[in-house]
Length: 149
Image 1: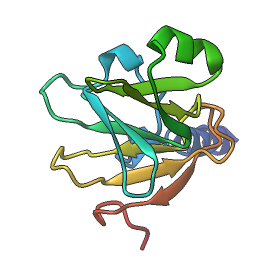
Image 2: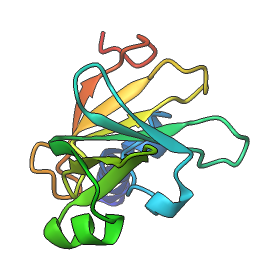
Image 3: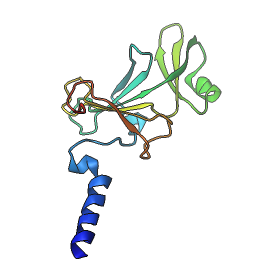
């Protein structure tokens, strides 16, 4: 009975901690946007936000969001943020006005670039767009580093 209990605990730990046991990073909450290295639009139209979690100056964690609206406006950032209170507002400040990108509040994808070479290694999709809470699913390994066998 003692062996069974030990084996049961080991199986539970292995199931609960796959990121630690198998060396595969699991999604983590997006860091504060004030700590973002930058942002850009992907060819798919998703807004990509880069983060440097280990402080070496290279992006190692990224989040991707739907852009729900994009438009030019001479309004202030505060005014536009007031119009879209539940969304994130990104903008490019041109000489004559700003171009605003209104993004979904939560990311659709969480991405790791584990070797920080600019090629995404591991993507998780959050279908519910409800933040990291355990319902995220493996989506892809564009670099092939974590491709399922």
